[in-house]
Image 1: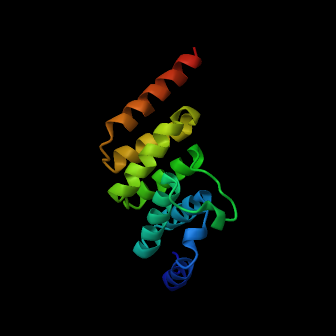
Image 2: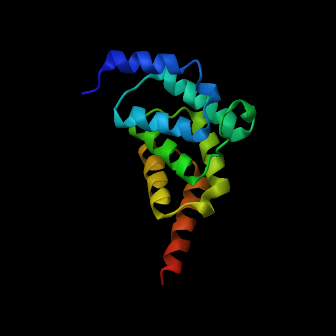
Amino acid sequence: MPHIPLLDATASASLRSIRQCDSKSLADTSWSFARLEYLHIPGLEAIASSSIARSSGTLDHSSSSDSVEFDAQVLTKLAWSLSTIQFAPDPLMHALSAAALNRISAFEYQQLANTAWAVSKLEFKNDPLRTSIAAAALKMLEWDY
C-alpha cells in the first residue's frame, strides 16, 4: 500500500519542474502513478499539458536536459498509464494520436498491442489511429510468413 501523504508531497513538489521534463520523464512519471494506482489530478494535468506542448512542438526544448522525442516506447507508456488510471483528456489523446500516427511504422508488436488496448479501454474513438494500428499489425503478420 503506497504512503499517500508521501506521494502527495512528492507529486506536488514535482509540479514546479514538470515543464522541464523530457517526454520520457513525463511518461515514466505517468507510468509510476498508474503502477501505484495513484490519481494525482494536478500532476496528471501538468503531465498532459507538457505532453501536448512537447508533442506539438510548442514547448522550448532547450530548457530540457534531454530532448527525447515522443518515440514509440514513450507514446505506448503514456497511453498504457493513462488508460490504466482512466485519465485521458481529449486534447492529450488527440495529441498522442497524432504523434502515434506519425510513428506507427516504428512500433513493435507489444507497442501496437498496448496502444490498441489503451485506445479500447479508454473507448477513444479515433478511426485513423485504429486503422493504422490494424494495418501495422497486419503488415507485421505478413513479415512472419
